[in-house]
Image (cartoon, rainbow, N blue to C red; front, side):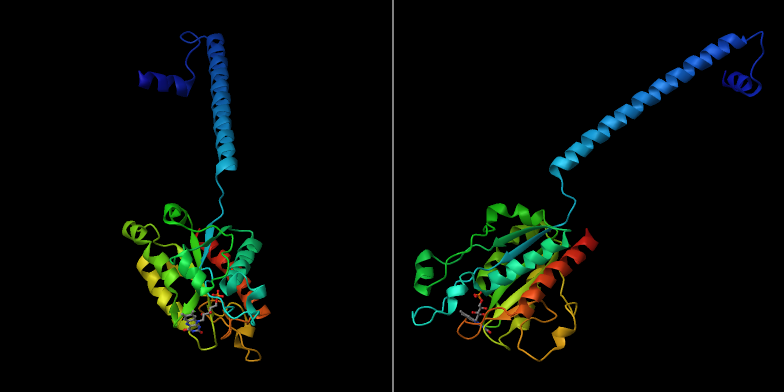
Length: 282
Ligand SMILES: Cc1cc2nc3c(=O)[nH]c(=O)nc-3n(C[C@H](O)[C@H](O)[C@H](O)COP(=O)(O)O)c2cc1C
């Protein structure tokens, strides 16, 4: 049968066995059918595409998601009211840098950004005795919200130095991620840091090192800034925090020092730089 059909196909058949009028009608019908099938297939695809586009527009952002997670300041130097040092530093040094890192990420236009504080580990009573400044309004990244970490592409952590190391509050946050570590949920995501110390030589780089081990265990990829901020990083003209490990600021022994223009610009640069790196991995 197939041999027969192929023979008709090749020689066109004979007028006796296959009248030309019938062939043309059949051909016309076949062509019409094909056109109809094509039309309906096209419209089905169009409908599907439109539905997908609609879904995409409504629910999904294609941009990488970056979370800035910082430690709120608890330390006040104002126990004695003769000092007014913290009057324009209600939110602390790390919070200030965090806002500039956010600005940099937002300016890149290529990321979705959210800013979080880590949960408090001290009681209200102790905080009161310490004279801790009021808490910023940024949301706290509680255990219940850890799915935000799983759904993100990168993290920028900010913390003050305590005795040359990452502060206990941030360490407690890292420690709370054991369940995500167990599932490997954070493997291959990106992470950077920014810091604050009281003084030069107070340990910004040793603080970075104590935090790098957290990243290694969690499977996070460290994104140091290197010397991407430019030649000013080599300048000795005025004291400034920060290093190839990330931006930083010096609060001063009494906390009165505010982040310098260099330091806030470096914080903003971290945001922009991180955006380019996370985009490459996306
Ligand atoms: C218990 C404690 C330990 C500290 N250890 C250091 C330190 O090792 N090196 C340093 O330069 N500053 C040290 N500081 C100063 C803080 O790092 C500084 O107050 C902080 O970075 C200011 O940032 P904030 O306003 O966001 O809290 C320490 C402060 C406290 C309360």
